[in-house]
Length: 364
Ligand code: UD1
Ligand code: UDP
Image 1: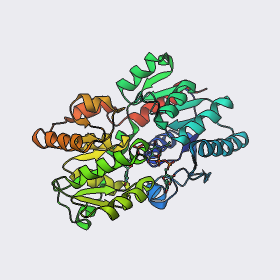
Image 2: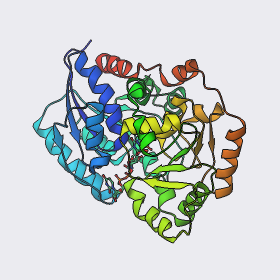
Image 3: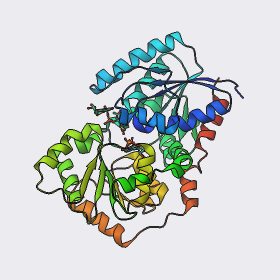
Image 4: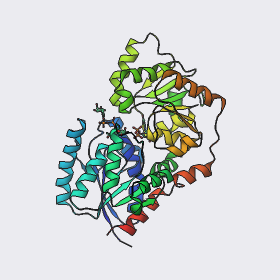
């Protein structure tokens, strides 16, 4: 077993801070060292600092402060800064997770510098190459030395692509994070928003394929206005301007209540009290399931097949009537989600342990 690993961890976007928090804790607990590098992809206080505070995650050792730009410019600038950092600092491995531009930048720099690369949340596929995330994750999986797959479906995807020899099924770090923070869900947010448990819905929309096409976004927002209870919509900054235009134009917002992005304990509380969750987010789809809530997935594909195939989510795309029909269905058939099923699919809250076990076994 390797001892005293020296890991460089690259993060940049909101859901990566949750995964980083649980993995870092386990690495440090075992006496390893982790240099945390924030690319600066997310930089608003409500998209970044708030999570470090809420999760008790140490400040990044370095913030590259790259910020927003086109895919090429953003990824290229991240690569340039990361390369410089890694030229000056030796490490046993670079660890990236998920499928953002920060993931891709970290992965490409590591492989070109012959530094072992670990991909956490490996093997997810939407089979839609128009999604930037699909490109990022396929490239990262192909060049990584160790692939930590969250689910059985992710393992199968990697095996089918001939990458099976580098794969370990670890479970999902988001499930670990949920397990650690669920009791800290900040229920006071329900009082502040004047909400009763099961008396409202929660929605999030931020995928490029939804937000960059006005017909799609318009249909989704129209559907949300027509629901029979208030719909809390914490607005991701990439879509805030468009939602403002929609609300300015609409005579009545109906059920829709756009709010600023919220912190993680507030989001957990909003999820736990919602009657049903409408989302195109990967993280929120899973958290709905962890809370035992049905979700209406505002996409045409999902990487989280187990939730869909178990009947706990419905994949509806963006058309108004399809969204409302899915809600009608869940209104009549509220699915049970036994705890054992959650544990079996997502690794029982031991993903961080298994990722670190795999690193200790595989890294030089
Ligand atoms: C990124 C990821 C996506 C992930 C999401 C998590 C890529 C290609 N996409 O999408 O997979 O699901 O993060 O939330 O990496 N902006 C701000 N303030 C911020 C951050 C962003 O105003 O702190 C605005 C900017 O206008 C920016 C836009 O949001 O151009 C998009 O941000 P970006 O990080 O490029 O992509 P996300 O949509 O956040
Ligand atoms: N989240 C949050 N506040 C919000 C919206 C989301 O804390 O206002 C959390 C959510 O609970 C989940 C993660 O952010 O843990 C999901 O991030 P996002 O939807 O931005 O990205 P994705 O998971 O789709 O990559």
